Image (cartoon, rainbow, N blue to C red):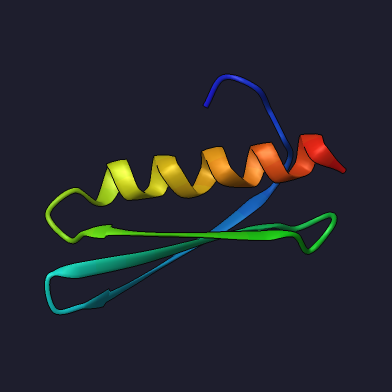
Length: 59
């Protein structure tokens, strides 16, 4: 992600063939979650971070 939104904590949890990634913005406590295929962890992480960025710009 090009734009720096500050410190973000990323958590990944695998459940079978699915991966749930949660991204939490440390300064505000805002979080975004994305679920996708476990074989594409970076893509699911990018999606969670993009959702978080969109949430932060909407505030």
